[in-house]
Length: 293
Ligand code: GLU
Image 1 (cartoon, rainbow, N blue to C red):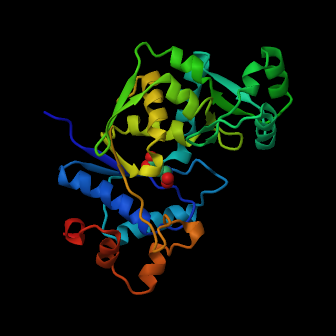
Image 2: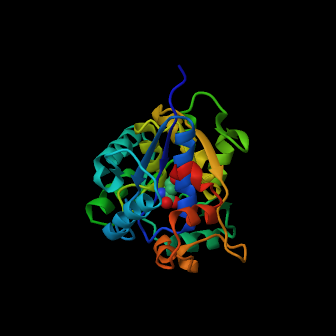
C-alpha cells in the first residue's frame, strides 16, 4: 500500500493573508483532496516579535471562509519550543552547534574588512567569526548574559553525513543534488536558534514536517533553495524526506510578487469589497468547483 498523501499549509501570522496565501493553501488542500489524503494547517508563529494572536485567528477565519477544512488539533509552533530545544540539544551534543555573539553590524564590518562578500541563498554568508572562540571565552560571555544565536557548524555537519551527494525531488524541477560545496557556499554556518527566538524557521519547519508525517510539501518557489538545507537536516536527524512541489508566486500587475508590505489587498479587504470565495479562487487561478464542491 502506498502511504497516503499528507500535505500542509504553514502560514506565519505576521499579518492578514492575501491572495498569494490563498493560492498556496488551495494547492496544498487540493493535492490532499485529489489523492484522498490528509490536509493539515500549521501555524508557524515562533517569531514572537512579529507574530500576533489576532493574525492567527484571522488565518482560521479566512481559510474557513474560503471553504477549506483541516484536521484538528492545529499545531502552533509557539507551543512547542521544548521540541525544538531537544533537536538543538541533540546537534549540540554532537558538537555541531556553536554560540554566535555577533551583531549584524559586526558581521557586515567583518565581511567588508575581508574585502569580499560571499553571497549565499539568504544573503551574505557568515564569515565564521565566533567559530574561532575558545571554550572559556564562550562560557564567560554566555555567563555574562551576552545574547547569542546558535549556528550550525556546516563543515562539521557535512562531515557527519556518510554518503554524498544527498538528493531530494521536486515535482517540477526533478531530482535535486545536494553537495557539501553547495551547502557551504549557499548557507555556511546558518543560524538554527536566533538571539530573540530560541529556534529558526529552517529547524522548525523540517522538524514539524517530519513529526507530522508530511509526505508532500507544497510551497512557494522562493523557498526552493532552502530545501537543500532542509535535506541536510533530514539527513542529520534521520528524518524522512517528503516530496516537494514548489509552486510559482502570485504577482501583481507590475509583475511584483504579492506582499503585505507592497500593499497587496488582504483576503478580508477583498471580502469587504463584496467578493465571494468562488471569485477569490478564480483570481488565484484555481478552479473553485474543485475546492468548494
Ligand atoms: N511559514 C512559512 C511562510 O509563511 C512557510 C513555510 C513552508 O511552507 O515551508 O512563509
